Length: 130
Image 1: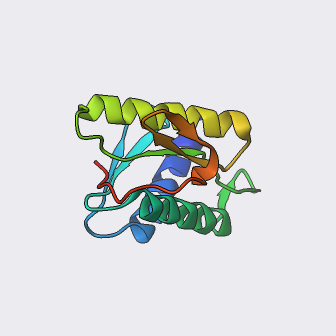
Image 2: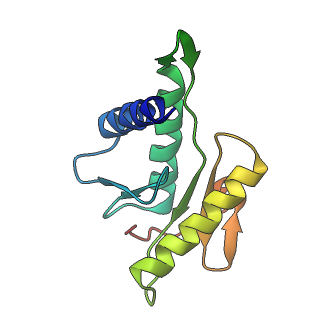
């Protein structure tokens, strides 16, 4: 129910706060979506941070009605473009997250200016994230 969902979101936030840096900002973006702002961070560093967060979250577990729940999430990561608004950057990250979800659970994809890079496999320039 709603109580369990709220408790899961709180647990998620606690794990995220332990994993991100003091300069990073976690913000709720809609019902079950979150944005992590990572200033002065390259796309490669951001991918590493999100993957570490995924690993830490799967190590933690949540009990609901005597059932052990393992929390996972898919993510999209986007670097700030020089001519983009904040909304355009978040939109690119959102498209990357949607592609990650379509590829399976617990995935992270990087958005580049030409679309989505599956699993962030291409090399990227050190561009600070929003």
